[in-house]
Amino acid sequence: MNLRRIGVIHSPHREAAGTPVQSALAAGVKGAVQVFPEYAGELRDLDGFERNWLAYWFDRAKSPQMVVTPYLDTTPRGLFAARAPCRPNPIGPSSVRLLGISGHVLYVDGLDLLDDTPLLDIKLFIPAFDTFEAKRIGYCAVHFGAAVAGGGADGLLLDA
Amino acid sequence: MNLRRIGVIHSPHREAAGTPVQSALAAGVKGAVQVFPEYAGELRDLDGFERNWLAYWFDRAKSPQMVVTPYLDTTPRGLFAARAPCRPNPIGPSSVRLLGISGHVLYVDGLDLLDDTPLLDIKLFIPAFDTFEAKRIGYCAVHFGAAVAGGGADGLLLDA
Image 1 (cartoon, one colour):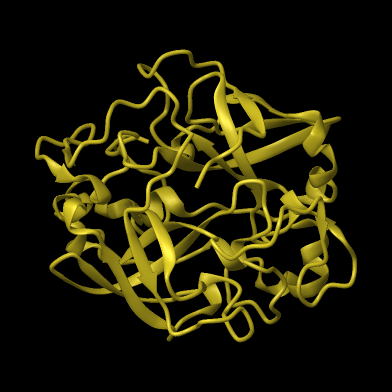
Image 2 (cartoon, chains in turn yellow, red; image 1 turned 45 degrees about the vertical axis):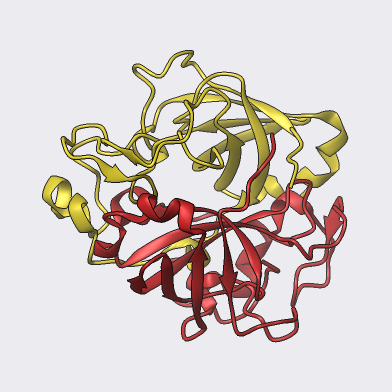
């Protein structure tokens, strides 16, 4: 199971400090997704979509850990109950707003990742397929239960 | 960028025909996510969450294609404007409902994948971080524009 780099994501953030920890908290953080020219044909039809999923490789993540203490939390949590980048497979998804496409470069808003992050995939976003409800959110309810219904998060709880 | 198998997903579907094409359309399709014992510690705290994201490897996907004709569509679309599994990096996400955990096995509902699919990652689901709005959904609007607001999809448009 080998991944291939299909492009690179350019973000204004070059270090973890100050980088939003979730795309839902990254409105206003704009950048460019540079798809390598050999994948330009795969971009056809994408310009009609307001949002896209990006999949990428956390190339600067630390070694995998069994437990992590999420940001603004004080208790170690199992890694799969957190979103820290130090995962057995350091891949991440982000939902970004598509501002425009020029050639094989996507201009996007909502980047919660570091500059020069390797791009792995792009997928269209459709609310009918990408919206799910969940009332029980475990230990996170303490921190921002009021946001469960879909509003903004008051605290930054997770890492990536 | 090498991936490691961290477990295996057991689904009732053994071939693509009849397998739901999206987790949002797979309610009632139950199965087991068997995490390898060495990752049991990473599951701590996960039982409090109603939903999780699974990341996995489309191990039976065809070779990558530049364009695909989505299910129920008749026009070839750029691969990145579709969700067919035949991608440069055949990784997929699914949002599943967690029914329970026993040891290092998760029992889940909402599987849109084949039996014995290699598991890559598990991440908690939080509506506040995982809900996004989008009004423009490109060519998909023709097929189920009414579902854009977040309701169920009337048609099965995409492949995976």
